[in-house]
Picture (tube, rainbow over the protein chains, first blue to last red):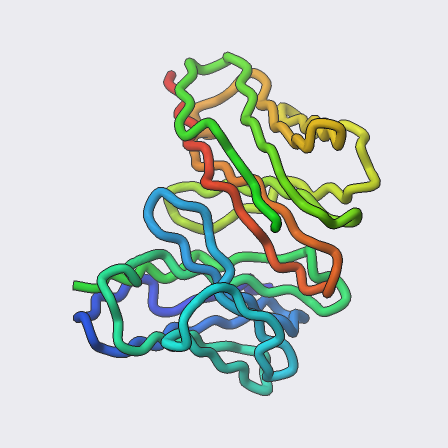
Length: 113
Length: 116
């Protein structure tokens, strides 16, 4: 049983560019949450997707958007990249009946230069 | 507002020493969950424990134990007889039950280094 998988593992982008990160949830899970973890900090909640809709959003600008597909996989898109967007982006999946039992992927390390 | 504070940024111990990682939280909710996660260098967050706000019993799992005290809003984590493999960043987190989304609020993390 595969856990949560994220791609790519590492990514380098230039300021102003756009990036798409991908997440496949654990089998049986229907909810995907995204977190941003800056170096030396704890993860910060970006948003959560359930039934292909954004259910809750943290304090992040509109440059951060997402999508959930019918197979429950999800994408995180960041437009107009800033140097400060450099971080580890973590995806967590859970099932709607057990929201506190979240499993995390290994993350995507984004570097903006 | 909800908040989690891990005052210890870094802790260094010698193998076999006991070590306690502190966590203090703030919430106005009466029903909430508390968590500890371990983050090795690979980056993945590894779940260690979840506690709901109605269960103040301390818990022991092998060399790990957790002390939950609502009176002081603390949820401390102790590793007994530490080992080099325990070296990692440890995060305490809080989740509100309201809304039932499981959104996690993390502390800043404590980097634990266990030296041989």
